[in-house]
Amino acid sequence: MAAPAGESDIVRFPSEDARMSPIVIHNGTVYLSGQVPDLTKLDESDIVAQTQQTLAKVDDLLAQAGSSKRRILSATIWIKDMADFAAMNKTWIEWLDPTCKPARACVQAPMAKPGILFEVMIIAAQNPTPASS
Image (tube, rainbow, N blue to C red; front, side):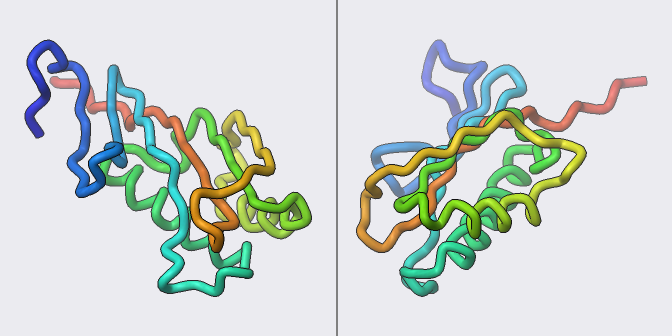
């Protein structure tokens, strides 16, 4: 991935979306854009399935960036309805490594598309690079 002039220390992963990059890396910190479920594959009323599918996307994107859920520093979660908080939170806890809990916020918010119930934005550290011998 070639960086624009003057931005050689920033890596922006390509995307078909003209608005954003799914992953940006700077100084060993990974920034994921807001991740939402693929509604073509899910029931629009199932917060658990939406959360599971979205967190699987997060796993994949972090792996592409040389990181993992164990390296998450911060998570910002938006849910459409706080009535879904307990079910979403249970799903989050089941996914999360209990020894590597990140800083986290969760708020209720209107979503960009009517069927979306869950969105998450992640900041993580890249995996350390092995020392040269």
